[in-house]
Length: 210
Image 1 (tube, one colour):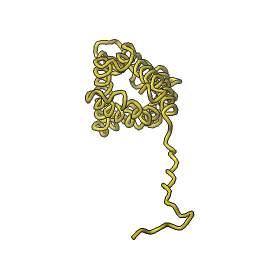
Image 2 (cartoon, rainbow, N blue to C red; image 1 turned 180 degrees about the vertical axis):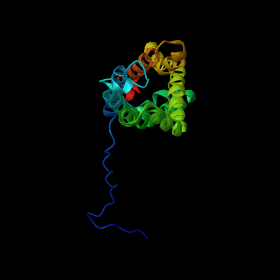
Image 3 (spheres, rainbow, N blue to C red; image 1 turned 180 degrees about the horizontal axis):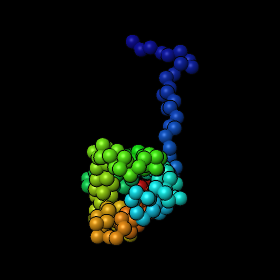
Image 4 (cartoon, one colour; image 1 turned 120 degrees about the vertical axis):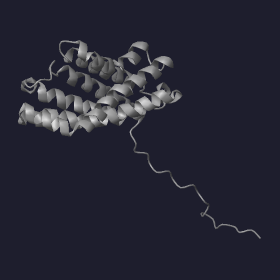
């Protein structure tokens, strides 16, 4: 026995729900903006981080700008997952770098607005109480970009100079003990990292380039 559906009642596939997720190009441009702001913010940072550094005219601006850059990078880092999918090391590096970028704004805003309101010894005690947070954020931003560099160079995922620039943040931090001012290592390193991320975003503007 067969059942005939009344005319006009033929089953039709339900219309798919609209996809409101950001497109590839928007996420790529977000990464470009994040990398650029991260580089500019760090470039504005004083060369030293001593008890008088917060008196610099660019102190607050530097921290706010690179904090915004870090937020934009954290939001757009998943864009690179397909490019780095060929390397487990690269994916781990992306994940660790994402964690580092997520944690940067909290530390940056404390430096920008809490530190100037406290004396040097008081803020030192405050930093001591948040040492675990600082270590997690610091190591994430050293290890993650280094792993990204290894994966990108080994698998030729990006132009060589762009791949190497990821590790600028790592190399810059490791050179600090040998330099007269910590900014001589940290600032160029973080600027290079920001440029590298901006380039990676620009080269990932279309799905075929990811």
